[in-house]
Length: 247
Image 1: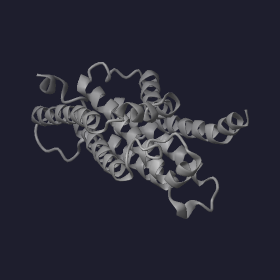
Image 2: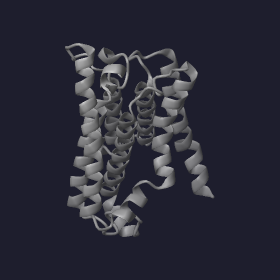
Image 3: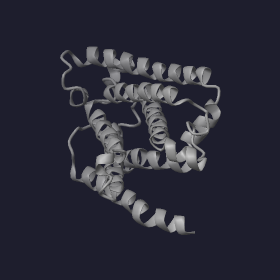
Image 4: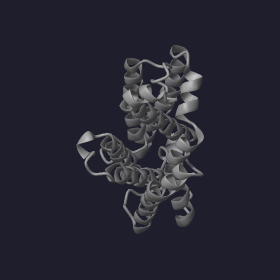
């Protein structure tokens, strides 16, 4: 009944899934089933992670510590809320609860993969300095961390695709920018990591606003929100972080 009455999670079903060929009710039923499945899969993966990793509490505490998770949620959730408020969109009110659940699990998996990738990337330095990182302190072996990263990223891609191609495209841009921050071929350019982080922030904001909007068009307001997210990230990189490190 939810699928038939709401047309999946958004009314403009064909804008989010242009390859869908059928009447809207049938497509809505299939996609609602897929959404529920992906939500259940995310919950199951969380339970398996807790069961298989003895130090899961310390790992999750590190991964989702306040400032790191706040930065991720600020752009994705902030972009969605800001766009919904400014455009007075009512799509959130009619959205299925599992859509919000899939989005939350997507962000959690994205943050887990990013934190473990950073821990592996900086493992030699962290071991020498005794840094408080999951892999360096022995909470998880490098091989296990790579397996978790692979599973988390696969879930991110599946969940993003279920949320529609605009969200999926924004997530792909974020993953590409995140990869480039660790690409050594850009190491000669001292500002490269900061610029790629700004691109990642803009793509998160874009994915957030596409999550709540009824259209797949890149409007002027969407561009302004993305530029604001990128500018905030650059401000953090070049002003806030140096100021905080000097204190």
